[in-house]
Length: 158
Image (cartoon, rainbow, N blue to C red; front, side):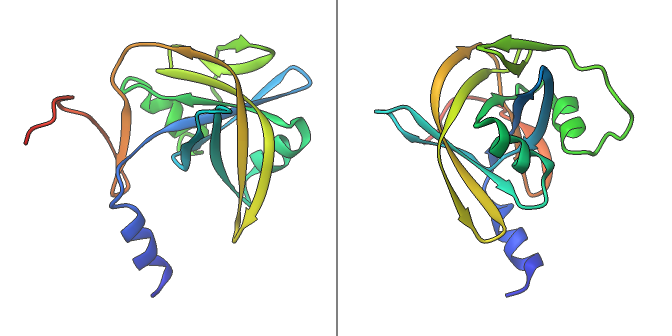
C-alpha cells in the first residue's frame, strides 16, 4: 500500500483534537495532535504520539513534562494555529496549572510527567503520568477524513 492509502484509512477514524503544550524557561510551546489516548486508570496514564520532525519532540524530551488540552468545538482556531495552518503570529493567553501552560476554556487540561517513551517508526510515543486535571463542560472539536467537525447529538440511537 502507498502512503496515501494508509493516510486515507487512518482518516476514517474520527478523533477529538488536542493541543499538546509544554514550558521551557517560562515560555509556552504547543502543537496540535489527534494521536492521544488514555492508557491506564491505576496509575493514571495517557499517551501522545509526536512525529520525529515536530519541534515539540525535543521540547518534551528536554522538559519531561507536557499537558494535553482537549479542544471544544469553539476552539478550531487554536487547532489550526498550533498545526501551522495559520501563519501569522497570535498572542495566545495561556492559563497555568502546576507550572504548565494550558489552553484556556479547553474541555480538559491534563498535566503529565513523562513516565516512559518509546520510538515507534517515525514517531515517539510519550506515556505521561497524570499529575493534575481540570475539566469543563462543552462539546468536542472533532476531526474526520481531514476535516473539522462537531458532534451533532450526544445521544446514541439504536
